Image (cartoon, rainbow, N blue to C red):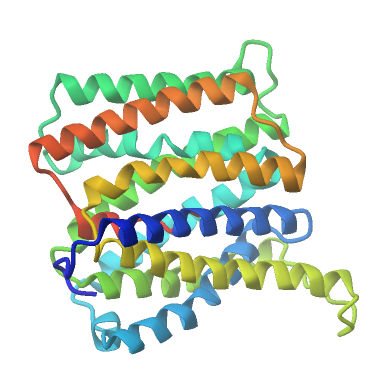
Length: 321
């Protein structure tokens, strides 16, 4: 994947980005459907393992397999994998405890934390406009979280625990984005995409003693175990395809143009949640998500005005775990 955009084809770029966002939501739905039988660490393993051949085949077809295998900052990839894998595991755990639209809405906090961490760790100047947009977005997140964290709510309840897990995952994903901004200075986009799946597969194996299950009582295709195994394998394959699509979209359009389409995930999450899981977004989720989206769009617009487009970094952020 070249560092420079090869063509300017907005229609194709938008189609690829929307397709990737939709597939990430399908992947999340598959993980959620399997969450009653498979622990988060095991789901992360299958999600990452089965994305590797998809990404590897694509790199080979594009002629960038060598770039994907060669790294300059191996330790940086390990840290990126550690943060990203933990975020993925927490998100998968949250999917088992919360409705899909709610998990999606809380996840929108990531860009807000990214702006704050960029100021803290990268020394970027964050002026009043972007701080106001961040504040607006964080107010939206608090509205979504309010029913789970209100006075009198038992912090030990599963829904509250799920909300805290997803919020922590959002913070970790923001740290991942900051780390990726540093990695692109030394390593290719191909390497960052490939080695995340590889390190996530290896790191998730550490959760093996924490309750992995092998629900395959027989090899019959009617077995419930085979159905669960099929769900998590498909999640990995679809996640790999989605990562390719989202990376490819930045070959045909700028990051600032494509960034707002991330928020289409709320539409897809609401439809999938309603059709598959009979989940209907609450008023708090819709109001909070609207504020977060507004804050995110303002940040994107401001960064475009300032010329702070980071296409390479955005194309390899955490794969919507």
